Image (cartoon, rainbow, N blue to C red; front, top):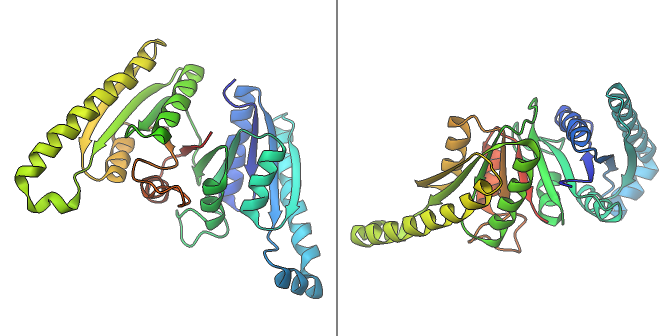
Length: 287
């Protein structure tokens, strides 16, 4: 089964409730269990003590209870059962700990939550959750309704991209999706002063990309799925977003890092840019 237990992360924002509604629909389609969590953000002992002194903790908790009550009502309207979880502490840490304790295999979050710095920017809680989560994280922009008709799967041959490709295969088999595999050839900036070297390197990289796409396409074709392979030159995140727009993609499926991503970072820069600057739902594959 693709996903057996899904947890939506709620902070009271419109974005988080939109993501939650999408989570309900996905859970229904997959016959998966659904959880909804709200975390009261008491970040430090000092702030916790101050909150207690000011009587704010009770207010925060009541706010969380109100959010979860609304979540329960929304699920009730869909005739779907949801397990409600109210926690307190560092939001991303409590989300990750709960996901592990409850054996969740997909987290669903909105973009942007209440801690987002600007419209359309991934909030710090979502960023840190993606970095720390051992399971897949689905990010859904405001007012988007997730479909699975067309999937875009960027790949660079890394182990992270390989996991994303395998997850895309599972999703495509489940929803009979059309799949677009994309490999972007990026030339190091340092080589632009040596045109001759650029031509040689570009040809080598294109050959490698062509072989990579050919291998990956076989996996989908062997399952009778519709798949297209695309090879482009340029900045990866720009080509990914251009393709997503041109092909009217429903969901971008990516690994958390690429070949050049450092494991110590929350997520790779390409994945972060695609989420922050794009308007498509993104599934970040972790497990």
